[in-house]
Image 1 (cartoon, rainbow, N blue to C red):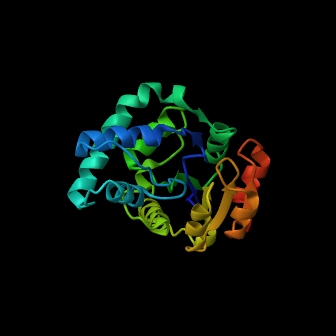
Image 2 (image 1 turned 120 degrees about the vertical axis):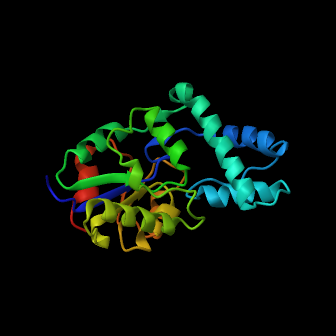
Length: 234
């Protein structure tokens, strides 16, 4: 077995899948169930983590974001997401090339794939499982939004867990972070990782390049270009 030498860390929303509208629906129900409050205002989502989104959401509605309250909100979000799992595929889609890219990258010797996502771990799994994108992702070593409101912390956590699991050092230049927002790019760059932008979200090529992206892809549908960006020398 080849010793792992490259770590690819994927964002989920608007990078691998499009489930726009799901977050608002889950938060609306969770806020009502946990705090008895009707949702009036929604924080912005792109590139942010669950810690940041949930904290702002509670404050916007006059609720103290104490750790216990955050835990209750997250538990409710996971429960609601699990109930939605059988119909998630009807609410959105896998983005072009996502399935082929994950499968092709998995076939390359020495490459490990995981996540850096603002989602909670359970919801990350639900979103990918709904579209059959879970097979080639090592969820155990992902960086998730329950860790911190500062996205670079998620990259650090994923690299640490991958290094410990594989007893291998993933040098910064061997780590690739892929996402659709400037915050994804900046999180990778803070760790000197290769940062790849995709134009399947709300941000333009100029915005992603200005954030420092080493490469920007229209989507994941052109496999040779995707592989060159992910696995080629920086």
